[in-house]
Length: 174
Image (tube, rainbow, N blue to C red; front, side, top):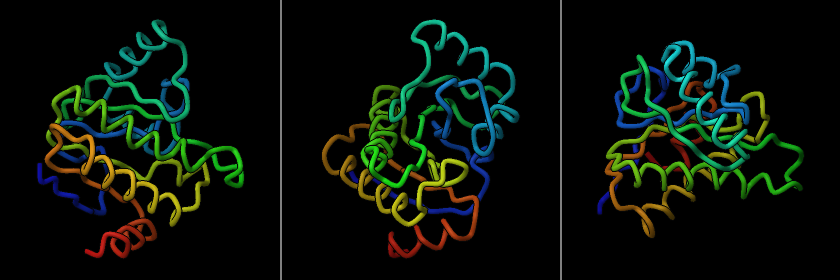
């Protein structure tokens, strides 16, 4: 399958895709940044579904992914993944960040998703260095496309800020 990788500078809550990825915290109950914006704009349905997931499995572990409907957002699903908090790189943060992307994409395959949009996971309040995070995201997505992808036709990197957008633009050679 020939999967297209797209880069845009925008607000992920406005993206029309089968699935958008939420950089969630382990509680799944909303927070700041992307997580807060998705919960605010998506409405109470997302929070209620997150509570049901919590009641079933407890908190979501770093690097793992779960999904809910998208509520009032222009997507079908929200895939919630918990990015690592940067602690200097010695606590497996790069692998855990890669797991966020690969586990989200595996879930997308299970859901028969054709288009999926990713934010810049862990680069805000979790302080993951932006360049390293972009390299991990792109490498993990390309590896998935080459080796595991069955359904995803387009992967969209949605950058909210100029710094991330320019890093991705350079790394993707767009």
